[in-house]
Length: 269
Image (cartoon, rainbow, N blue to C red; front, top):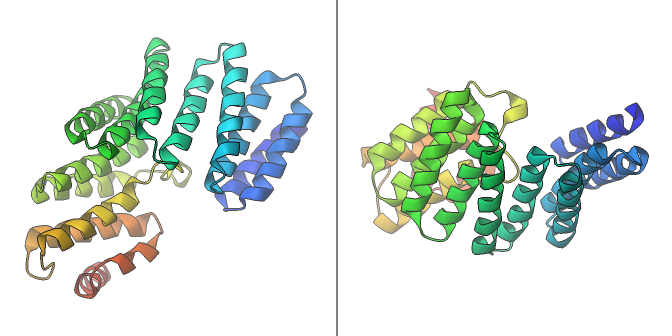
């Protein structure tokens, strides 16, 4: 019904504002009002699950993602199944069970491929890459990130392209290829300018944050002085810029004081 759809929409808005408990209430009302509308109920379940996930309530999130999956399976909604599988995998990821998450994402990729869902394929390749990255299989991660970028470019999806470039930048940082990392981050920044606010970084995807964490870690481990080493300085600069675009400036405190000053002064120019 229109009323149920309105509650779902309000729930999405509440979630975007960080009001997760209120979001759950709205989506639950939508679920109840949809009654026999299985498609509407599946969307409501995904909303409830996403909100629980953001609250760190992973058991409840998994429960509603599973419920959404079953509803989507009942009506042969392959796109819905892929979204639900992404959510289930994310709950495993959040508790550090990367192998379980990888197994579920692989299933999601097969569904997206079978449905010729290019967007679903590109997003799933990115998430599979993340799992490989966390498992230490960085070269496998690179393959998935590259495939994600290729598909996203073919369908004109700058948001996914941006996320893929961020991930590729992280890969090159791991390989200590600072020039290539900087190039990837620069490309991500250019793409970010094309991304609509509604397509900003997803809850399941923390790659912009990991840019800064990775750069900070490398600077410490290699004992680089960002005021003297041009390559590491550029990586820091672009990583911090990406963070600022994501409006999460709190992580700038992770930087060394000298580097933080450099970034602020550079951005001020």
